[in-house]
Length: 394
Ligand SMILES: Cc1cc2nc3c(=O)[nH]c(=O)nc-3n(C[C@H](O)[C@H](O)[C@H](O)COP(=O)(O)OP(=O)(O)OC[C@H]3O[C@@H](n4cnc5c(N)ncnc54)[C@H](O)[C@@H]3O)c2cc1C
Image (cartoon, rainbow, N blue to C red; front, side, top):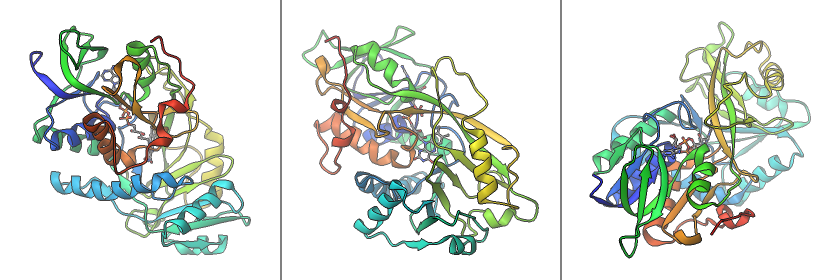
């Protein structure tokens, strides 16, 4: 395999790298995906049982990415023959004058998303299980929510990439990316085990390790901060379980305010509901603290106040540890690495705890950039590397 030259070498086998490998292979590109650990490991950002997909965002530029992703998720699961996406409605809630609530309202109006604006009394009676919000909050209900099964989705993309001819290698930690000095163009990617792979282009989707890898290969420092966070599952009280379950009409939800809380209806663990805090504690991805959780007291209070009598808020019964790769503005980094690599190395990173839902659309952008040097169907100026004050040794 070391003799072969690939059209594209993708570094990192989480959801971004695996969906990119599928997209590239589907387009007929000779594709190699390299992952430092076992495939489907639990040390990054893409493992677990559920991710929310919602259309509503305070920033308008996410609309086309999520909208396209709904279709792309359905196409991919139709290809593989099993379900990774589960349809649900979505509820945004928060203080009536919270800037992000107002921005989401404006977003729905601008993009003609059908929505209902609900007061606290309506929220308490709308769903199979009541949600109690304070008297000065409001909620926005729309049909574009849903749940994606993350580990299963990553496996799906890897299966589809293989079926389309991609080569997939795990336990292959990339330690170097260099211009191919023996040819007029192209790259040589080296692993810790001393293997060398030649590729015309390279896509870096290294998640929480992206900052380290980019710095090691180019000297460029991108401000991507790994955070340790937890998906928390809470026990629904006896007799109430069905009321918060997927399929009962209960929505996925996001809650703005002092703490940003999100959750999904009961699906993966019968009798448990996922409610978690967006955010986490800064960490080194190679020296994880595997800590007790982030803002747990605020989260307990949120669960107690929103679901009184419905959910046991004393402790989550399952906590799944995971990492975010946070940028300062929580927008993604999707761009060429530049410097002496020019357009040959594309970076897709900094997904800041909200990228999973858009993985198939992001894959399409990354492959467009690698293949054509541009993407025609999405605006990515908000995701540029130039918005950071970066330093490079070149
Ligand atoms: C608890 C939690 C809840 C979330 N909830 C949502 C949600 O509801 N909705 C949503 O849209 N998003 C959500 N997200 C965010 C989403 O999961 C991430 O944005 C997404 O998984 C990032 O994928 P990735 O491929 O960039 O990173 P990863 O999954 O971490 O993949 C990067 C891969 O690169 C590999 N790698 C790194 N360095 C190297 C190297 N040198 N050589 C080879 N391989 C390397 C790593 O081992 C890793 O497998 C959540 C994240 C967490 C942690």
